[in-house]
Image 1: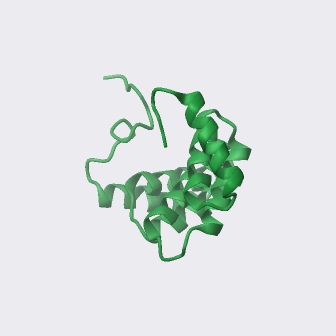
Image 2: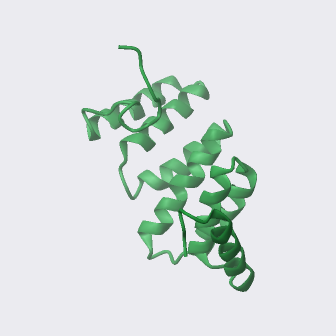
Image 3: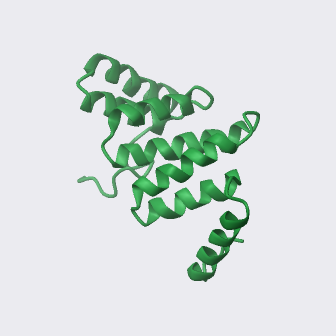
Amino acid sequence: MYSFFDKAEFDRLLNRCLEQFPNHPRANYIMGINLREKERFSEAIDYYKKAIENYPKTDRYHLNEAYNNIGTVYYDLKNYKEAVKRFKEYTAKKPDPTAYYLIGYSLYKLGKFSEADDYFREAFFIDPDFSLKKVGLVKNLPE
């Protein structure tokens, strides 16, 4: 269904799928990704929430990715409290250094410095070579 070459056709087919199957979890998840890429964050959140509601609780992989992505949107919106909540749901099932770092940074922005430090340490515990550049959170750091 997804085409890197014909974005208009992709959008048309995704919208058609959601018209016919409005609760389809994967279609809602993909629409969330699509809207986030277009920086339509509030709409992306709605689609991620619908994906989370409709994925079977046994589908841990896709459900977990939806928690991660919705956490990222809340982070982009600087809604750090909600980002922490969603990233914690994600990391409860999949320890991920990037998510731990983003929890730490969100907690730091909320003034919870000691707790933030714990999550920063966890990121480096999981991946001792962790860096913001390595995971794409910054493009170029001065040498």
